[in-house]
Image 1 (tube, rainbow, N blue to C red):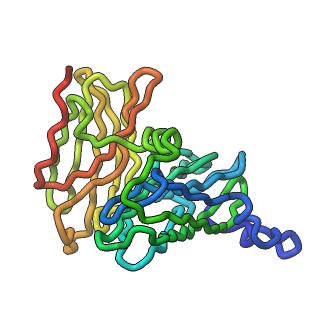
Image 2 (spheres, rainbow, N blue to C red; image 1 turned 90 degrees about the vertical axis):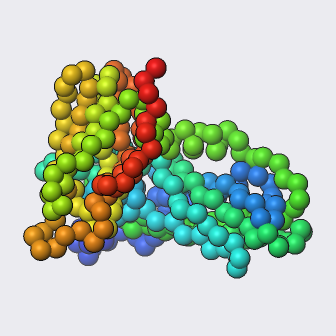
Length: 279
């Protein structure tokens, strides 16, 4: 699943050029009809994937290639981080874990304007995206889109339903998870992070890459009416972490048939925001 179909097929069966480009389509929209000087505008970059195919999360897992998006903006403008929705966890033959997106992938990003820009200025935002799109074969794809926004002192909201739906697919801060308990243990070279969620039936964790902090093993357990995950981090002897061990990723909390998702970002030795007390 890591290689493009071109490398998997014999020369006589090579796919036509650009097939991966046609399996995904890129678009962009803004949450307002203009941008005020010094203000921040929400943008939604949409990648629509053909039925039966999938692309990859920012951490593709044990195969695949991350979907990447870059924005080109005029001088003086700033672009925030691209925020991915929660992916689906797929397990391939050989117990290979992949994190993928199917159908419509909506990515959120904020665009901030300089305070001194003149009203009436036209602001063009260009989007470039690349992906690996797969089914039983894979193709490399890419695409572009653009949007133009006028600078104005008064603006109105647009595409409110689209943005609301995209935001609903984003993980919530783990501080909103009632009663969750985080604890670090172990040594500097072999630290362990445990997380207990009272009332949950099961937990899962989709890790996001953190430089220098490898996750060696994930364990699940159920005890005292709470679901637990334990993450073992491992470092080579003589090569301690450059900074405090950090774990970042999406926590999936399952209760009955429902599933909620929370963004976990915790560093050993740092005081994290306390979760809300249970009601």
